[in-house]
Image (cartoon, rainbow, N blue to C red):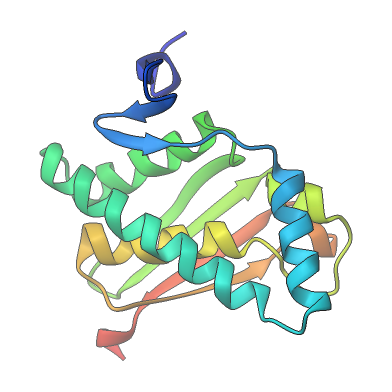
Length: 169
């Protein structure tokens, strides 16, 4: 095994899993789907909450990996997408990164969030959307806005996320 998963470190005394000093948590996607549905039933906006949670994690990870590696912005985004795939968030492909235009497009096949939530009328992969909005801020310094234009849960063949730098428009 190679890549990120092979370099995860486990601290049995703390029960902690980490990569490059950043703690991670393995969790099945179904509990997140239960939280999502529970928020809907309670009248809370799960999309916004999951987006903000993902954004926070994305900013922290993007900043950490920008400071730790001497990669180009595109290389760092590709690394983050590859890491996301390796830790089970779906097969992620960076389709486009244009820092001059302030646009990042990411495609995800097999989103565990879409699979766990099942058929939906609107996109449901808010955590991924938030993470890459945050990655754009942490890695690229953007004031980011991210939308999921296509979602597996709505019948699309894959999920597509478009992140834009609000400072450019």
